[in-house]
Image (cartoon, rainbow, N blue to C red):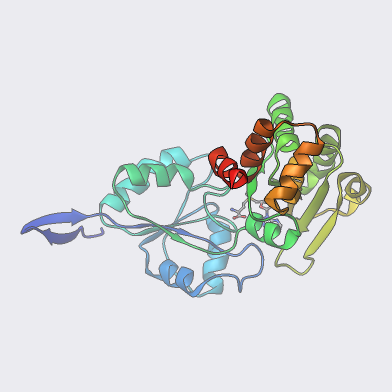
Length: 288
Ligand code: SAM
């Protein structure tokens, strides 16, 4: 149905692929959609949606009429060829999920990889993402963080993930569903231990709430944890220790390790490691 888009390249007529747009949609509040996202949704030839019924509600709200095709976790691989062929025919396609940013614990990744391998242009249209919004309002360290998505259901894999969190010095972000929250908190208590935790619940919606406490305190409040939840767990102690040390002058940093019985060579090596610099730099500083 769609005509191939043609362009002239060095005097030769070549067929042009359509673009693949990854369009972020609101995670609750419908005002959280960008003007660009609305324009792209209006202009593309086809929208590949995680759940066409949900996307239809969004499109109706903004008075957008567009052909929809389902593209969810269970058919993403089989949809791949069909969507790639359509892109190669010159159709512009938008991927949307039920809420937030496609490809983040949502369909998108498979098609993006394939599109790139087929030289199809992939264009992100930024917008809401629960993980990032939970993080920025959490009050935990935002300089570096680890996003882990949903914890695995398989017991062994789940335990491994939780151990990863225990050893991680960066803020960890996980997605959780309300009916698993109690189990997850109990696992976190057993494996991760005492740590600051933040619940970012129902963000951008009427009952938006941030609970900032430690894992044990949160267990006591867990009956009340309904709706959509992002859990943010403070990084392990080492990070804080390093941060404190890195805020000292180099001389004070040196003295800290000297008091701990390290010799000069070990101290220089350790300072360089803490500050993530070459040990020669630290060495030269102290020679001066
Ligand atoms: N792609 C989405 C994004 O960019 O955030 C995430 C999709 S994932 C299938 C759904 C999970 O995101 C929920 O289980 C919850 O953990 C989190 N989430 C989505 N909307 C949220 C909201 N309004 N408040 C808190 N968490 C939310």
